[in-house]
Length: 381
Image: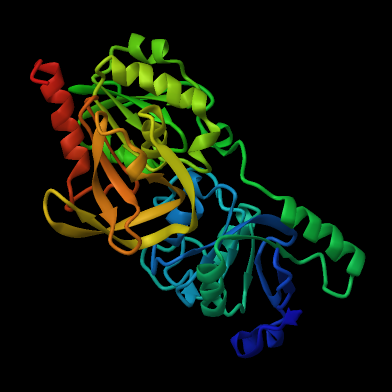
């Protein structure tokens, strides 16, 4: 059944000669009509909703968004524009964007580009004029669903629709980590008090900056790097970064991590890294109904008794009750759904979190990692 944009349709677009129809096709058969933003064409992905009011540029360029079509729940997107400083990587990794309204006239002193220009530059297909509240409520009820945004396939073109829907239903996010990891090892900030080996599963630039600002030398390594190669660097610690997709798809990476952690290397894992370390410890990771996507996920930390508001972007979670007791314990849970958000390992010199660590304030996780490496260097742990 086709639903048109209705009251969400921008009345001024046709008058200004800027209207191009776009359609959102969902695997359950729902078709929504809106207007094209960004590049023309067709894109297929997992449709997830992001609850952030800001940070759209960071979300679009986050490698952890690979394979996703993002529904923005905030009603206007692009209202402060885009700039060259807020990229989390050099490319747009999400497969498309769905929004109620795309701002055409952003207002911010740092703005260098509009949303439409940014999406066109990166060849990203997007749609506006969609009732994103209705769409989000549907995803919350039924779970993450595959979909397609297209300017090329109209609902009345039955053969083209049937072909597209077959592709939508068959879509699966696979091989995402090898697609986003770095091709070769490289060093950031050659001089530093501490040397951190960064296993790049889809690292965000802000994470690297958080460590270089703290005086760390970083060696960024491809995701498939063997434990022996990492150990040969003589690094003081290992950062296992965030990344896209299902941790269960990468048992070989988990096996290499186990070798390093069994050897006593201090480590900090986040996002995908959190899941892979848990698999290395013998725990299980499962796909969530909707996942967590946005900047307002509440995390309750047992040790402090406080709830922290965090940024997250993942569809998979560690099953906390499957973590062997001799390996460690869950140290934080999501205040909404009680899913595992952090683990402190006792068998290893390691801690991991599901969420995106804040550079300042909060649990001060980067500072904790620094102190852990310093203590290990002094032989105190």
